[in-house]
Length: 277
Image (cartoon, rainbow, N blue to C red; front, top):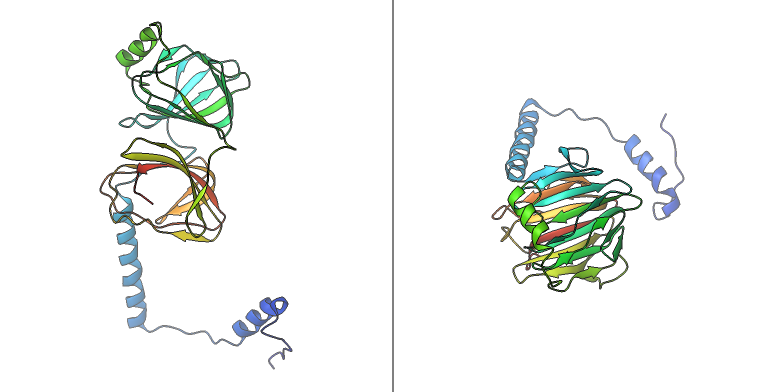
């Protein structure tokens, strides 16, 4: 004998019980052989399409990649050698010498705090050193993890050039710093806000805040420039790939744009074509 329920389907407090009552009344259904074959074919078609779409992308999880020591207390993990993107880990008390930049360098403090000469940066701060500018000694009293883009780690001749030219007079171009609590957020789509960091006329760096339960698609069909993303907080699906905090991904120029969604919410550093939104 089936249970009898006295429930109000319009009462939110009864929602779980209404759902349970409906499920109890359902009879299991066995698909026919033809139906099973159709479901299987559709499933594998979806899997192959997803694999083809994700194939051009490079994903490095937070626990993947090789760290190598470059100085006492300083180690680096390469993310993208072509675009010179790295993670730099400084132990407490570690430092890097004064140097001059010959290309734009972006930096985000992911953990801890660091000093760039007289400038002190904390977790969440963004810093841009323009080509021609000079940095004093980089150090950290308590330890720090930095994302850096535009440094010649692994290129011995260029590293030597940056170190030697630091002794030439002149500080070079103005440095740009945006603190974690600075900058203007603007809504680019329902549930998606963007904070611009740097724009060189062709590419743009920004922070993207994605609210829980959001699904968003870019207006681009194909990416006009390499698109780089680093998950700073939370997690999000980029297409069918779930990226979690600390994960990094590169989508090359010409690859298909993918929808972005998040069940829990996410904060993402993005760098790509300036018309990507």
